[in-house]
Image 1 (cartoon, rainbow, N blue to C red):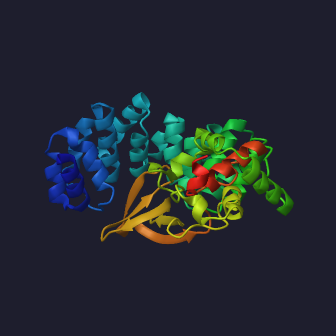
Image 2: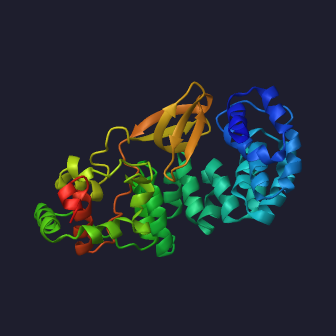
Image 3: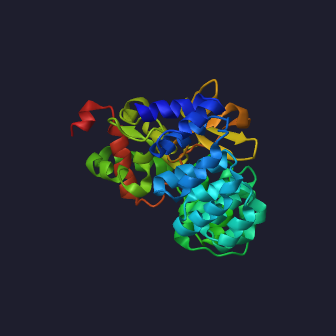
Length: 358
């Protein structure tokens, strides 16, 4: 239980406790870094972290994160070297925390630009547009002003279709009002959006076909397709993610009509307990996800990737509830009509023993 004990002390300890942790074997650095994320305190002997920036990838990443979090200015040059040689996101993030924006600009890789953009979105915009990528879009979504700034920068810019699609999904999954950015990405990627704004007659016909002709076995295979992301957020039979409601018995408590609406327009009705929260820190970083729980020291947020992010209460500037679901709209848009029919049959059968036996 040494790693768990280390995380706990790193999360709750004072500077003397943190110094004591740094005197332990360096293999514990990842645990220290994880715990320290919810502790506003700093080790007074943090300068010794510099020697571990030359370790293996896991140790170097943890040491880099702690150097940034604890303000080790002597680490700037070793961090620059580490970022150039290993392209570690934690090294780039540490340099941003230390205010080394000129160094990040000079390195000029997607990783360095993303870290710069997360802290200074307007200043980093020209470099970000020149190297726009998923990590860079994600960085803009982390800043309170980022989406609007990036949307403006994408005017008259063309990006690959695959990148525009991936970036649009990231934007929707942020739980924020990002319509302007989505529109800019659609234009930049020349996306021909596939609408699923079905008419009432279309919906009735689709649901009738799901009940009469849908194949639950085929629907199960469609549900498990990686590109649909269903299993990343939802559980069925104790397998899957925890960002959305458990769908093991969804057919027993949701009508087919409401299930179809949830697939097409996820934000129409968000189940209680799965509301998206937008936590803004004092440096204008936005953390989006589900509120797992609150402690006396921190808010624990499960982000769209499923990772639990602790945010110290002392760092929180604002906490809001978003009207937008973490489930992006349009995930089912690539499906053919017959595939959507089968997916609906699978979901509506969940929790109905006579249906699941077929």
